[in-house]
Amino acid sequence: MSMPKTNLKFVCNNCGAEFLRWQGKCSACNEWETLEEIKISSRVQSSKLKVQSGGVAAQLISLDKVDSKNFERIKTNISEFDRVLGGGIVLGSLVLLGGDPGIGKSTLLLQSLVGISQNKSLTKILYVSGEESAQQIKLRAERLKIKNEKIFLLAESDLESILATIEMEKPNLVIIDSIQTVYSDQIASASGSIVQVKNATESLMRVAKATNVPIFIIGHVTKDGGIAGPKTLEHLVDVVLYLEGDRYQSFRILRGIKNRFGKTSEVGIFEMEENGMTEVANPSKVFLEERLEGASGVAVSSIIEGNRPFLVEIQALCSKSYFGYPKRTSSGIDLNRLNLLIAIIEKRVGVDMSQFDCYLNVVGGIRIRENSVDLAAALSIISAAKNKPIDDHTAIFGELGLSGEIRSIPNLEKRIEEAIRMGFDKIVIPKQNSQSKLKPVGKVKFIEVRTLKESMGRV
Image (cartoon, rainbow, N blue to C red; front, side, top):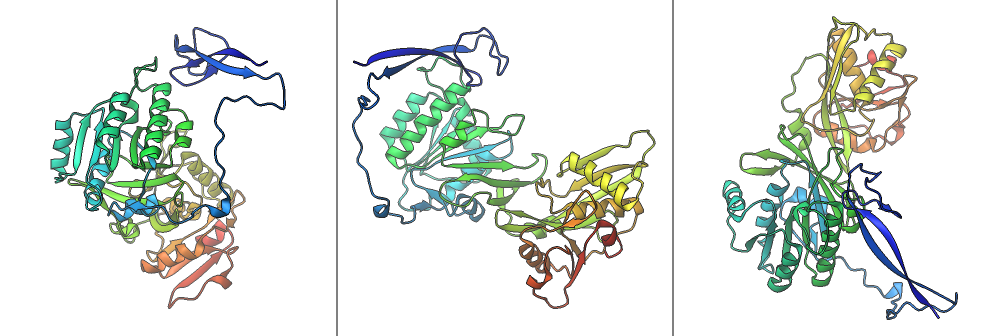
């Protein structure tokens, strides 16, 4: 006969770490008095063949009989937002939007409600705020010139009250701002702790699936750039979006990290203005429109965000160093990558960079994660050091190896098409990228290079 057996474990309310024994200090997050005792009941079986789960068997369905038609979606009528979502908001989905404080998360969602409410089938949209009062949200809406009778406000942070309101009012869409402020009295933990955030997300997920109501939850970002809460939080939700950018810059990038209903790594470009977020339909033009022609230390390259290429301007400045250790500063490109490029320039090209303080910047506050701009960044540094400008009509693509060789890059055709569309007639590409696949376009000249030293005399 099987007998129930009770196990004990201790869970940290701050970081979610689990321990078999109680201890005063959590060894994972170094917080004191945060471990709570949790009882786990399991059933020990006397027979390996007989299973006594106590549950009810579920009905199976053949994979061939599953309906694979497209999910019903709600359009936000903001094309950049819909692009990242995969075409719109899927009914019954749970979407997590993360970003730094003040980056524009609440503003973007509030603006999207205007387009969403144009759908005649939607009659009630619920905006739940645990951080601001209804009057504060009203002031933001007036600043954004938003006035809509379908939007209803709820200033509440109690999870049970929020779930009861959703069940009773039956809204067509729910926004939770933010998930870190939602708490449950049934959990012995402070508001915003790992346990509270995870419990609230799980409860909202069950409600979304049971009622077929899409729910947006806003999440704060930690110092490390991740959404505050356990990493499992991102596994619980259907869609994870990040709103990135420098809060002191005007441009914002909405990046799709996870999407169960569409493509991942898609991006939408926005510009923060006085009246809220506006879409940037042609990012390449915006990032290049203030470019100063004939200036040294300036190069143009391309990055791929999702399936979308756009051009970026890379600026370098080299000034004489009056100290024994020259200064290196970068914005938009990892500082370690800058140091690597400078080492390659010194070793493989012979340019003495020890006498220069070097500053590297990507215009517009864009953060570059790929290495396809290595060649453009290196040539901009050399151009600044020698005070010789690069031709204004030249776009430069290529990854730089430690031996000074130019390595091939993916999606070269897309990058070239974007450069040609923006009027560049000279395009520097790696020799390893086969030119046989490239179709000649008008007077556009392709310059194939093998090494960094070779490329110096051809731009």
